[in-house]
Length: 128
Image (tube, rainbow, N blue to C red; front, side, top):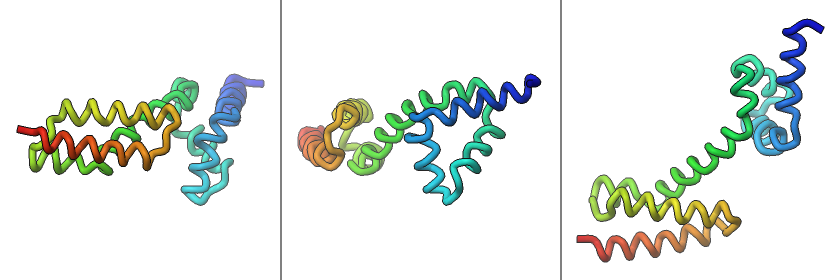
């Protein structure tokens, strides 16, 4: 087996792991309406070995970042921070991080969002 074949085998083993298949490959192949094999080959072609080694870890990190952005949008913080200037960026960031941690710990998103909406209202009422 030559070096290129070994590299392809190593890449294949990475993306065929249970967690990569469950969390990334299968959901994205459904979203993209393609086969899992086709998606795997796209990642093989586009990512180098170090990126593939960190494949699932970067996915998990991005999940948290995406959750913060989703909370930001769902709580309408763009409007309350930037346009109306009723909530400080620091207060909003603290709120989002606290809420995101609750969701990551297993609490239901809609319940945590409702809690966050009440906290946003409190922050607005107490703003200068």
